[in-house]
Amino acid sequence: MTSLMNIDELAKYLRLEKQTIYNWLHMRKISGIKVGGVWRFDKRDVDKWLRSQFRKAEYGK
Image (cartoon, rainbow, N blue to C red; front, side):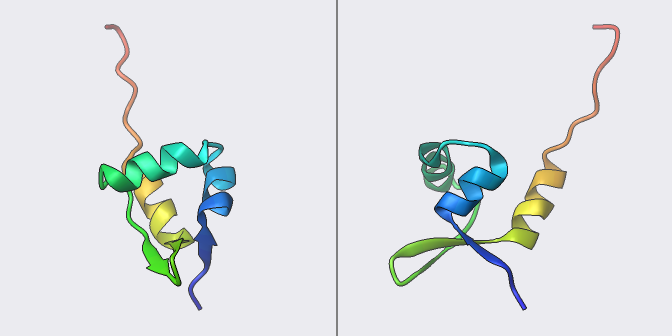
């Protein structure tokens, strides 16, 4: 079963302001689905997106 979060839950999970989530949606940085006029986010997709954002630290620069 899919674990869907609303925007409040996602903001809390990522420790961000809700406005940041809305901005990212507008910029298509993250994806979600509107169900009954409410944005929903699949936790597995969010976790996958988070892992894709990791970057190796560059030492010596």
